[in-house]
Structures are given as structure tokens and as C-alpha cells.
Amino acid sequence: MLDAARGPLDDDPLADAIVAAALEQFSELGIRRSTMEDVARRAGVSRITVFRRFSTKEGLVQAVIEHEILRANETLEQAWAGADTTEERLVQSFRVLVDFVGGHPLLDRLLRSEPEAVLPILTINGLPVIEFYRSVIAKRLRVEVARGGIAPPDIDQASEVLARLAISIALTPGGLAGREDPARLEAALRSLVMPMLRPQR
Figure 1 (cartoon, rainbow, N blue to C red):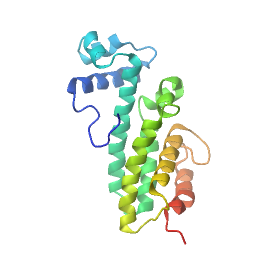
Figure 2 (cartoon, rainbow, N blue to C red):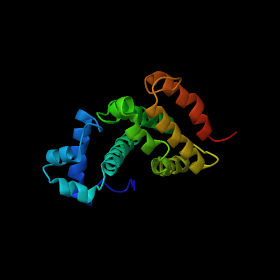
Figure 3 (cartoon, one colour):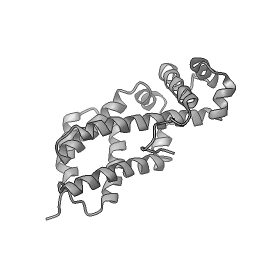
Figure 4 (cartoon, helix red, strand yellow):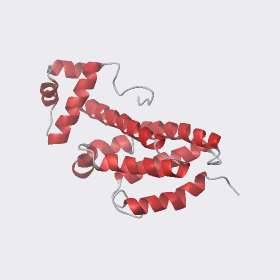
């Protein structure tokens, strides 16, 4: 289960090493062409060791993606802390997420060449990911409300909308606010999303 309060797999260093090896393997050859034996070899462990921690290849793929989602959240935390206003924090966070996915050695490749491997985890089976980001965003928005910069009518509802919007933009190229046009994305965030969060007049 995704949990921003912990490291990706910090309770099991060997599992963490296997996930890191899987990330390298999948990034180089893709998921379809990689086997559990390939991952075991790269991690320097036995095939049995890999299967004891991840009983299926699909489970290992999901662990890799969850690991990278948590790593993206760490990057988002740094971006949020480095901006001066609520609006700039929001814009920077979206920009960082888009850049993270677009420049990621595995996620961007999978979205283009093997979408069936990653899209179910982020779409039809994506409620845990949405809930993870909703909770992270809600925590940040409550801090901003306390500072007096925003006053959304419903923090949880606004947080879920932002989470769904961020995931959609990160996964989808092109369009009025797609990940391949940062200037248009920024303009859309400032003109359409920020009014949803500002005090109602």
C-alpha cells in the first residue's frame, strides 16, 4: 500500500534491491522482454529469492511503479517547499510531476510502447494512487488554508480533483494543458485551477 510516511520498501532492503534491479531491467529491455530470472541475475540473487518477495511478474511491476510514485512524491515535496506562494507551489508541483514522468526512463517508455503494463495501475485500478495523492494534496492544502492563501469550499473534493488532473496531465501528451506544452499548462493552472482554491467572493 502506498504510504508517503515511509520509504518505498525501507522495511526490506533486499526487496528494495530487487525493485531497483527490476527498474533497470525494465527500462533497458521493457517488461515484455524481461523475465524474473533477468531481474534476479541483475540483483545478484536467486530466482527463488525474487519469487519469495514478489510471487508474480505483475506484482513486481506494480512494486516498481509504486516505488517510483513515492520517489516522485519526494521530488514534489522539494518543489512545494521551494516556492513562495500557494499559486507558485501548485504550478511548480505540476511542472515537476510532468517532467518526472516525461523524463523517466521506464514510465515514459511504458506509456509509449507498453501502455497495457502501466495504465491499469494508474487508471481502472488506480484508486489507491488517486487516494494517495489526494491525501498528500489535502495535507498541503490544509497548511495553505491556515496561512490564509486559499479557501476551497471542500478540501477533500478539491484535492481529489487536483490528483485526478495531475495524473491525467502527466499521462497525456498534447492538448490545451498537455505535458508537452509547459507554458499552456502553467496558464491553465493559473486561470482555471487557482480560482477553485481561492476564497469565494
